[in-house]
Amino acid sequence: MQTAAKLEKNSTVGKSFGMSDKIGYALGDFGNSLLFNFIGSYLLVFYTDAFGISAAAVGTLMMVSRVWDAINDPMMGVIVDKRKAGKNGKFRPYLKYVGIPLGIFTVLTFLVIPNMPQNMKLPYAYITYIGFGMAYTAINIPYGSLASVITSDPVERTSLSTFRNLGSTFSMILLMGLTPKLIFEADNSVSVKGFLIAAVIYAIVANVCYQLTYKMTTERVTHEVKENEVEKISLMETIKALVKNKALIGLIVASLGTLTAVFLPSALNTYLFKDYFQAPGLLGLAGMVGMLAIFVALPLTTKLVAKFGKKNVAAYTLIISIVAYGVMVFVPNKNPMVYIALTTVSGIGTAFFNMLIWALVGDAIDYQEYITGKREEGTVYAAYSLARKLVQAIVGSIGGFALAAIGYQSGVATQTAEVAESIRMIITAIPFAGLIIGFLAMKFIYNLNDKKLAEIDAELKRRRA
Image (cartoon, rainbow, N blue to C red):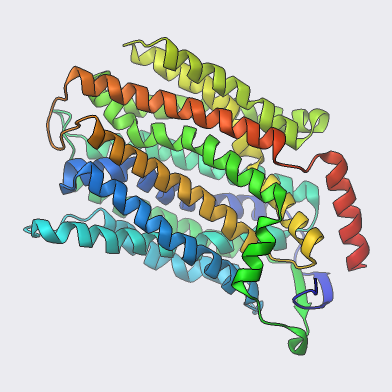
């Protein structure tokens, strides 16, 4: 297959890679994860208990929004790939300018307009939620692609991936520690005003992070392309090429399973602690303690990868999570502290996967170039980003449809014991199945072991010489 353009020059420019790049890149994912996880963890309960939309309608909304993402995300990836690098770089300007509309849509999504007619609420939710998704795509794809031009050194890229995960982790600490205090009243009911205050705070914090990422990072790897040798990029041809990327397909399937196990409890924990454990005050503690898993995995990841390889570490550590969720499914209990302990143990297994995922995506980008001859950072990243957003939609849809199916009553202070028990089964059995799928995908579909990666690296260096 012909390359989209001949690389006339592959050069490194600007100041040397250093701590400024690492911290700046971490702040970018602090902002992204803050908004993404705020939506993923609390939008469902906002819609059902504060905005007054039925759980089934929310499930449909999530699915329709992701159908649009299936069109929008690849298009954005192609747009990013075709954009020429300017004086401020190719990817950094998106962080500087798109953060503001993203923040606005975040606030609008959690805004309850007084006296809004009931028949206008669902259309308003569609407009604001889809608008948020489009703005998030427009900043997240360039942000994810930015790592590939900050440095070309594999070790330095691994450090960027590590710092990115730290940024995400600290954003979750803020999210889990502050949000429950804002959105719950003293009688455990939700606060409409509290949701809006949280949205405003997080939108402002995220925009500060985006501006700091823009200022602190440097795009030093440039690919200069001859103007007359650029051919049009066909979206359909790009999609066909992505399907041939077995490593990317493996990551997508593994993420669909594994991230469902991460996101579903985040989306439904509010209901679990409120209606099953009847202890919503422990929700913040559950989120904070869960973050400890990241700090357990952090110092061990590099050592384990050096000994066993990225693929094996990402796959086999998921067994820890599978066992923990197996206990939660088959040994029910009413003690919230036992649940918190088991989810923390499970979090150690998924933490290794999440710690390595961005390095694995980078390998999939290299593999795409290896099999097609094209360097398409934005397109490959967009495909994986779409998979993560699909997980969020699946979680929202499963949560919404399942709550409707078990008879959850929106706005009711106390649910029946049968509904509470059904919530427990949903929040444990589905992650258990998802983790098994994640393990099987990493083991049998993802095809880049250390030997294959060395072969790919040598071949790409030969082509670029």
